[in-house]
Length: 284
Image 1 (cartoon, one colour):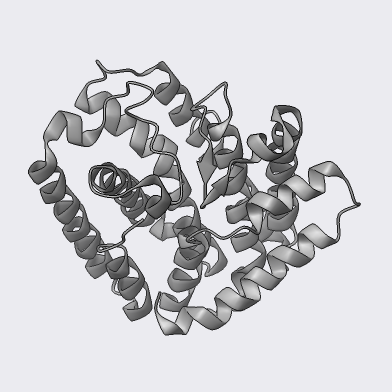
Image 2 (cartoon, one colour):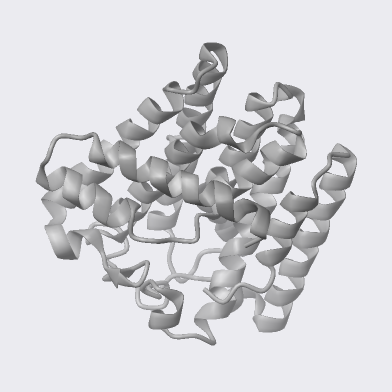
């Protein structure tokens, strides 16, 4: 991670912890903290901070929304890992939430993180922008966004086509990468840049999943920090449909596409480009 993001990341982690600490003691609170505060790449909130920096906006202005994004993402992971969905056992290098707390508490913890995400977004100091952020959060996470992608994923199988797989990745993964970039545009007062940020987020979502498929062929679950369940669940992957070399080529092509869109935006985006560049050679 670029050094310029490390200081704001420390503040971000402290803000996340304080929002969980403010809740009344319960099994739900413990389960929420277990997954939310238990590590993770934090790529989505860091994208928000880096995009704000590109606009010349103080990154601290995005703390509340960054917390909202990570809460929404973590809720999706808790539910995605449950027996009714992917039935995974490992997440972020430790047992999945439902393994530790049971499916009933894990379900409630996910629900509570989703609602806490909206509370966090709504606490943004500019009330008009807070309203826009809550609307954006709902659209990107809901039945026309991430949840739609999860539905497509559950319906898929070994016979899923490449076009169907791309749709799954575009919604299930891409929407939560579009979210921080579009949120930065709202916070910076540049709502007119949404099309470009949506295109970048979509590209990141697809290439990120292809990278996961590539890594699944070369690393262990322990190195990845999560269960590698697509083959266990007999799902088609980008690599099973494209092959390793073509998958790697498409990742590079998506990175080239992102750079071209950033060129069109003409921002002071060295930090953002550095963050995106660091994603090229990730190992988990």
